Length: 327
Image (tube, rainbow, N blue to C red; front, side):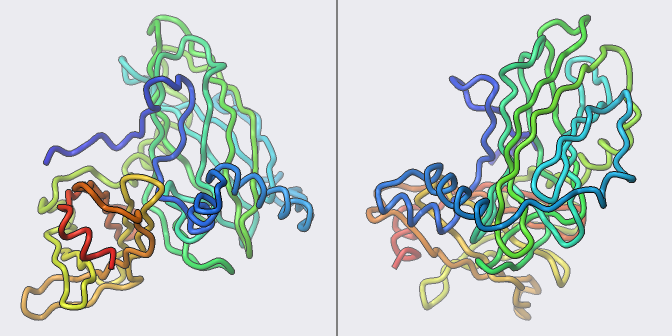
């Protein structure tokens, strides 16, 4: 199966908007079944939370968060700040970044939030001389809050942005409207409007940081392919009807699983179990939410992470196996 690029491109027909290709939260699934859309669920929950929880001052962050010519000014959200940073001219594209800094004890979300949370979404439609933009997600950690398990980042994170100019000889005026979630005990929505001019034929002061962030993005591989000591080897269905993903991974590795659309919610075990017969690490994956009727094969994405690096691969599961897993 061919591997895919690490970057996430916006969907055709919605120029300038990137919504993280994520599995839904359980709250969004419940809202959909009640007749609301996942977006409606997020807005309603966000209004209630924002009214109940005061926005924290970010003066504690200010001394460390300076503005340079290679970065946009910081824009403050709930217990956080966000900015754009300039990086590396790669001839056909430009490597920039979206940086989020968090107050002590707060976290933000990966593209698949887990049991709760709001992954980052960006709209770059107001940009000038930008033909395309891709967003990449560095390897996340696993955390717990009042709503359950989620995947994300603490302290700070840099999301690499691969920006394609319409005219490579002219500057790009990158304008981003950002929404993201911030969590300590519960998820709070945060927003920022950011702008930065990216000059052609020049490297920004943050090129090295962006290169390191890009190295943290899980590498696309085929199922069964090994890289950097990690592999998604195979899958099987256990005697009790649970999906088991066989991996090559050290102790403490994390597995994330995403379904093909919002009707699926997959919940991997926090830790793998060593299989002495094969020598592999085996993750059990609970199909916590599935469509009421399963009529076709479906494709799933699995991401295996060890610290700051990882791999991801797609797996096609046939309809009969899916029906067994959904019981």
